[in-house]
Image 1 (cartoon, one colour):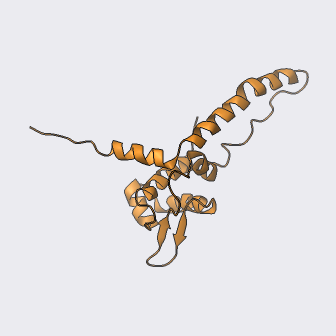
Image 2 (cartoon, rainbow, N blue to C red; image 1 turned 180 degrees about the vertical axis):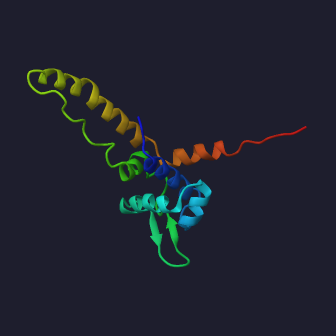
Length: 144
């Protein structure tokens, strides 16, 4: 599966915001931490805000934050907000006289695949990703 940059950045931004729940972070700070363009980040933040996943406060003391618990936000929520074409139904590619093949492929491959992906993404919470990121960032290096 190929997830666009907006989808990948959307997941990263949500983890970044989840590290400090309820605490406002500016787009500049998030962009620096993630090493991405502030202008592109603002597009992603706008999508996440429109989906109700992040909140924002305007002004010099403003920023972005998550106001819900991380176990209520799923990977599906984040990707639906940032990946507009990912969850569209597969288009019909065969017409008569091969419509029965199209229907068989649709019933046997595309619909079960869509359901499996959505089920997995729905069961993967932002909290799980955050917990995993915490274990990834705790590597210790010992020198002798």
